[in-house]
Image (cartoon, rainbow, N blue to C red; front, top):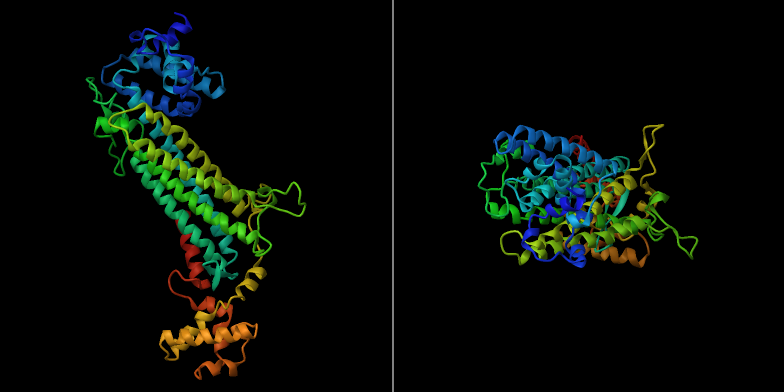
Length: 483
């Protein structure tokens, strides 16, 4: 039988039609040049299906052996680049099945017994995405470790904390970085939760209604590691839902969007901190670019691009939700459009996480075993900026409350003190004691410790506060959690 005949026979619906598909429609409907990345999942799912068919006596042992042998050769061909992907065969599934039939004959044709491309593709995408979620979990851990490493070196560094982008109160720079560790920790939790719902088996749902063959779907689920937290097989319980559900893809893209939002917020701060007006940090030159016209420029292209790519990922989320909103049960060709946004979301997020872990934490030097070239912190610039904007005004109000004033009265008193300091063009801590006592007689010499940046920092010793001792406790907690 010729290759063309094999290709034609792989189209199970071809005998029904009186004319071939047009070349334009072939290109329009084909997905092989983007869904071929599912090939490992497709082979893994097919081998589990074949093993179950043999165990159930639906195919014979020799057919099972032939399928295993053929799939091993196909995997080798794909890995080596020798496999020929054909547009005429439309997608990854038919390409692999056609090559299998070419290699092992009728055994290849029997592989599709008891399944449809509908449940096959749903299974493949879940298997592939499960692996990508595991990879993302590791990358999130690396980014968190990088942030904790930088935080540990900068516990005593004072940064102006902002609200409304106005100087508000002094905080430890480490404390500020650990806020992002908390965000990325929640992201990891969300991805783990998405993985649990992704890791369920649609295979055996067939086209939409199940199948007349005596399949052991739970056996396939166990073979593929699609089990719940108790080790029980996790199988989609409704065949209609099994082939048409793409909630897991939407959930993943939602989690990815939120993760990218966190990266975008960090990017915005890095961009501000790198500017000459702040000068708080530097990032390694390999993460920046110059200007084609202004030789003095060093532009934070990586954070800026990550900020832009966030919109791209959020757009994919909107696209997937819109894709699903009008679909009746069960499978529809619309669902082919789930893959490109999902694939691009994974690629964008994984690339971004890799780059940010290195940009923040540095690159490992094989000779020394240490990381080099990460975030460079300008502690004096941060502290000088924290001196502006009367960052310890709240501390003075708290001081007066401890002297017996109601907080609202203390707040008003400090407002007058700030107004006086502004008129004298000095900080609150630079006002003479006699001037401060003019605002309230209970103010004593010990107020200057309260008005110092370090005193303000150390005073916030509640759980989750910015006092260095609390920050070190949080760093130890994250170290233990991240391993």
